[in-house]
Image (cartoon, rainbow, N blue to C red):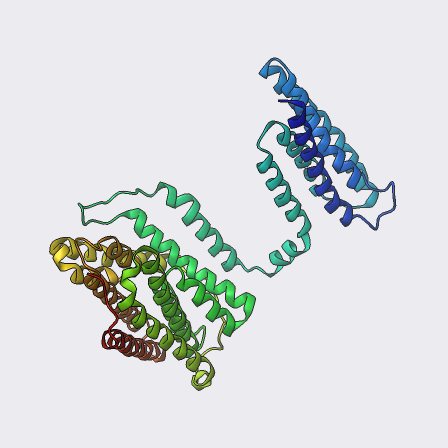
Length: 433
């Protein structure tokens, strides 16, 4: 390592110490000089000290000797810093290990800035300082969080970080069988959308939270939003009209998502698909506005909106994931049976669970073996099939006001989409062959 490069790295080690020291110094700014063990200057020098010890270790001819220098330097530093901070805490009548840990982290990050990746060292330093800075906010969150919320968050993290990596990523049961990893991803999406809606309601209030959660969930899966909303309608957690408005917004987002995918992969599909989906999007958005602001107050005998008691329940989520996985497997089997000539049938079958897959597949099949007209028709059929699937889920889970609202919204989207398709054909929008 040349001198200039070493100086850059030592400067970063110094900056890391200064960053942590500014946060620690700001927290203890009202204390009298001489009553604290470590402030801005001390933490700055701690970061630099870590860098110097790492530089000395790197200069050793033997890797073993360098490791001993770094390990011994850190041990001595840790012992001295911990003793001084312990005495300062005793004198001040406090009991906390945060400053000690911050000092150890500062030293090690200073050392890593010299012997490791400078970008990683800087990023971790910023993250660590951020954690130190939001102490009050973190304690406030802990006081407000409930056990169901914590449990649901842990379950969702376990589903994503522990179970997902070990779930087999292979098709079981032949070419048209089921992929366990795909089914588990569906379960994670369902749980994630439900949890997102819960957090949105808690952070933004009942009405805005439900609508914002539905829009965000629609970016991932409008079907998941429908399932979650139907279950909450059954439990009486919110007004059916408000939940149906959320489904309408998620549906509108899903239409826009199809347009975006087609535009990115195969713009020749837009002349027929875009007008139909754009008008359907407008219809769904208008329906949501009407449901919230003009007919929202007509729901009677139901719980106040936003009184969600639990982000999600594990087994119902897994059950619906298995159901949707079975639908996808059936769709693939139908598509495989009928082949390219049965693209419309295959699109309708697969669209029951996933429109994006159909959109991507049809975009890749143009101009051969399908022309743009056939591919556009398959995408629109998949969209209609998907709305039928969501309506069926809503009716099967909740056969009251919510299902009626979703049915009315679905029919309105069909009418608007048909009008857009008719206008595209009548006005002579050409589709390349």
